[in-house]
Length: 291
Length: 310
Image 1: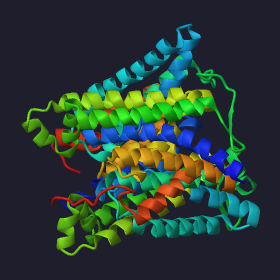
Image 2: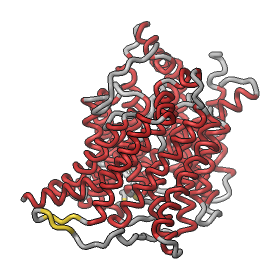
Image 3: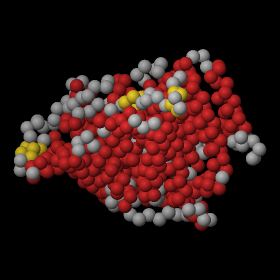
Image 4: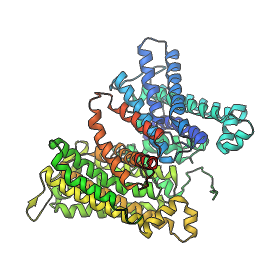
């Protein structure tokens, strides 16, 4: 009983950590530009696929993983420079379609150059499962959780203790005021796309040894990251992390106890209920609109 | 103003009348039927997105309900296709009305999330209930008929959808000019301002959402009967995006833009078939390019350029 519960919890938290990283990516870009980046899931996919490509090319693991984070970050910056900046202030629908277009281009290019096969990475430190109260935990899950925790702490430090981080926060609160006190908001936009792509890619790399990857895994992962971000209250960093874990855990529990066929529907049922009763998510503050 | 409102409609009807006689073969006739079906769906969606300013990323879900009602009810329960079509539309209307009230308290990105979620849940349900829907493989749809007469050839279907399209254009034009349409446009401009002058904002948003969902469901049924087959891809997220893209590329809040968007995006995959393997890349690039260079959509941009409003 307990063992089963723990088993579902472990797998939920592991996947949830990836959703949390994706949700943080949504949050960063949303705060800097009010854009919901539907290409976020493709960064997750890119991270995993590139890690596979670079390790198979014979690069040492650390170098391959670094490259698999840096390349998506560059792609993120390119999207911002080429597609988001030229249409500043466009309608929400227009921006959504642009980012969806970008995601199609990325997915299509990966399918053309890396093929449509499913790939996997070897776990970073073996695959001997650890037994806890009758449930098993993969060492890779510890990697996922540990790195995610580190990233969250690092982001907290960045946004609360460094000038650059505070500049990004200030821009998200009020872009015009931030510009007036001399913050380079163009740089903030640049950084937020680079960081959010890197976060997504990192999540994708960490998860690949557990769930495998292929050119089309980005859609669902990205949409669930979006669910997590909205669940936590769009724009709220802590909310994104909690939302990600919650989506992961509930999905695993639902798949285990209710119906595994409807696993993918669970996050969306959840978000509909949350939005019906708490229209600003779990942690979203009350907002007032200026008329 | 009033006088030339219908000029475009006459042009559309004229084109529809001439088209089947100039199309070289049945491939193009089939394409024309698909274009017309999409055009009707997009007209309904544009009322919601373009005129009322509300996003729906789940409209393919409603298409799916209509299509599967037309497939499942006649096959498993022996219902008459027309009755099944009506049942699909009623079910869609009820579902849309039920979720619309809570959904339309939301705005912008939250609204996008809610409609997206709804669409995905519908498509997953269609994929999983294999004993009724045939699961991921889909299922055949019986032919549509009335009084012993069966709609089978593409030619017959062409005249049916051409009629549907003409009526839809006429209805949309009238709706936009009606008090209802003016209220929609007002709440797009400013919800607070329209509330102040007495527009029941939520009621109008719910009404237009239900209307466009029922439109989609009916056309879903039509598509199912025309193609003779349904599969869950028909209801998936990507199809919803395609429909929204038709609205935006043709031109938001433009009746004729809806037609242009539907025609172009229905033809595009055929045109892209020559780029073996690169279709997705090119399609994505075209989406981005259109939005970056023509953010208002084709028809409004061209209309502004040549100094003629619709």
